[in-house]
Length: 505
Image (tube, rainbow, N blue to C red; front, side, top):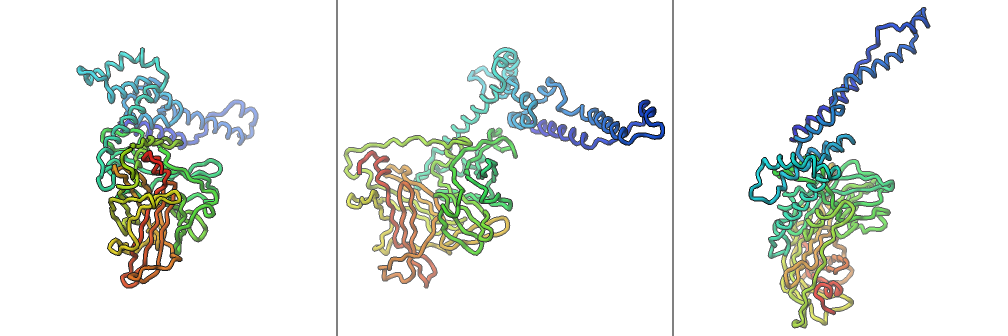
């Protein structure tokens, strides 16, 4: 069927090429009016007019066999041999093809072949028989394109059901779906950024690189033809999936796709309204949001790359179930009440933390049985101590040379003391309570160290969002050339805890 679509497009291109390459042949027949008007010789202006008229006649005669000039009945017969994706593509050629490609008889035949009535005596031939019987009655009574819309909506609904089934198995260590990576590949899910300038023009960039981590994915966009940063107003992050997948689950290149808006960011005065978290000799890193990073060239202040660090928690739902303009609304959480436990919501937490950058893992671990006493609830936060400053046995090193690795089409580099941090906090029911993936940076601490076992510079990491805070303290050991985490504390918002558990702390 794809071959049929290719033949149609080829004939369309050949017709245009023949029209453009038509020879200009002047007529040898002399006009009586011309002879009478100018007996001494031909008028150059009149010859030019005659040549143009001859050229128009020649072009018309050559382009007449073009597929656009075929009768609608013949075109409908050709279109009836195309599959759904080919019909959607051919409808983009021109307005005439669009109306023909919406034919209800053709789409009802496709719809019936994929979604037959649930009968025990249903057979393959009955699809064609039903289409013929209904072609002049029920099918044609609907508005043009009705069965196309029905087919597309039912295919999307079937895709949603399959995604839900794939996400049912849960990883006991992270509390996240076990087959997220398989689901992303099965549905050809990718991510794009849409840059909009102040005139409303869109610049769409496809992902250039993606890496899978324990609890997140990292997506990069880079090119050599970025629009001017000063002319941009917003940046949209969208998940993209093929509108229709064939039976082999292989998407057709440049086929119809649908977008799901994940987030939207304001790019106005980017360098003044966002935080710069690090730099090297070539680029500066600006964090727009918890998981979005923009690299700007030091020379010229142009865009070098854009990176998104996306936590896997509910990522597929947000990347596939929304629309191009509206984000997917997650179902509201219903708290499970407990009137017996006086410490309900204060214990039984489990943390999985991963510090990494572009395939380099600096620290990855799981910490169980985290708790908070009521005395530690202060200033609207619950304190969960993961690594204690006073317990040397809990202190952990960061493996390797810590830095944020980036690359473009031409350059690559490493911004020291920056990396990505993934946090997955589960409640006592092993349900995801607080999840994020964000670029962070280590800054030199102004506090004096009270640890005599570690002699070196002190660093700290601080992350804050609406649901909580993360505080990390590190010490640089000169002898071993590595960082040690000597303190790791989570602060959970009491508002989030009360909402989640139905408590009143």
